Image (cartoon, rainbow, N blue to C red):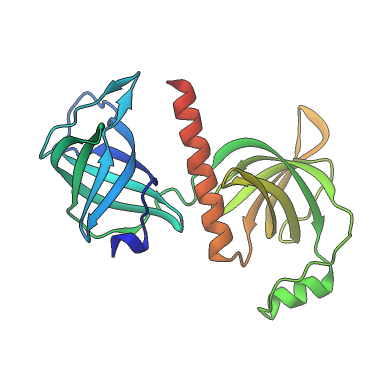
Length: 239
């Protein structure tokens, strides 16, 4: 069962499960690791976390909230360390899942600050008709796009700046690139303009808030995974 969702080499985060709430408001510690081998439907080996070139000897019987960056999406469960040892010069922790594995959705609408180039244009009437009839999205090729800049993005929408003003409730095409699997992948999605306002400090520039419209699950998952991977890079840089 686990092997349907998790593979060797997948990145994994572990956050200590707090059994009681302290008064100091301290942030819970997160450890970063990699899946080493899947042993059974509820047991897997992971590599012992390393910080500043030192192994972190997480104790046996300690419990964690776990997030796995699987190939088909992000998954979450609770787990307990039941063993630790060295195998073929690799330091291993054995995790036993103590809850069902489930899709990780908590940050679907968490907005990630960025600066991404985007092309945008209003949808043509026939394109809107395709969407309203729930047919496959067919964008007319070759139509000019106005340069825009995405300033934050989430699984639910984005915010962008443009010298072109788009009317609230209108549908637009958003064309941009995200990193996927080490390569740039192009995305063309439909967005509904929720709000547009002129920036006081930048005359002639408009800020727009956009909600994704009829987006397929695969594209949404790609965006969410992109956000998590970029956050991981930022955390590693801060260290």
